[in-house]
Length: 425
Image (cartoon, rainbow, N blue to C red):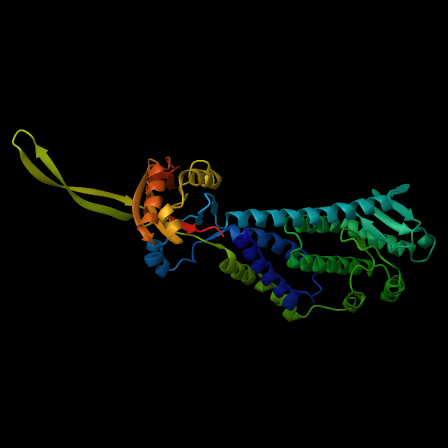
């Protein structure tokens, strides 16, 4: 998940920087809105797409031969307890993430409840919308199909202008954009780029509405209203649109601004930004043509014939193919938790090593056969024979694994298991 989150962040950063430099000051507000929403979704999808062009010949020629499935390091303590290095960290990572999701979710629900309580007053239906008049002195705002205007504005000359402004937000469906971002901020709690996206999208919303309002009202009247309302306290809720929810200076400057030819042509760069994001953040596609390695062991056995009382020496060759990488890795029956329980019950710290106060890491390679049986291969790293015996005994006592598969077929797969022997403090 961490890798995915990093990739998503890279994609969002590229798109946001492109928007900041090329499109933010243009007057194509509808296109900008589509760009921002589309690139948010693209940031979630692009890291999941395999990139068939990211693999180079060096990786294919050498790395594929050296990479094997490496399990998390197992720690065997001298006090008969075992643990999986990184396993507890994963649990803590998920716990922290869930806490942040909970906090973000509570903030979202709380803000919605406060808004609903505020607008929970008698309303009148007008053009399929609901209009409520608040006693509180707040900036007028809209929330989905409800327009809230403080009572003091009723009867004023700008009342219809305010109503048209908030109605325009609703008719353009701006609330759905904000709801979408609010949900993403629960899934990706407190992600800075999502806050940046929300800020830019709300500004584009105001630009769209301002452009529409200025078709029927003068710039002077509208700007005067915005400046007058800027002195009134506003609701600090991300889920609502209000007349001064965005920087006034930027909005007023945009009233009479026209896009330049360069800004117009810059939209042709958008496909290039998508290609750049794809090359930076998409998953590397490992070729399905995995290279098989060959295990070969030649030994001799002596056969005694009681009839002739003669001994005959025969050569025995054990040979098969196995893979260092596959589509789906082999798994201990029941997963990592079951594996830890098994190791904790079956493996002890060698007594001789306790007396010598010796500790270290032994790395063993074994092959999970297509039948699920384990075949001892070799020690990649050794510290002492006593540690080796303990590890090889563990491998020999393990039950059948769920074999690995390549292109849907069960195959022999090499697995690397680091075992760290550590004296308890």
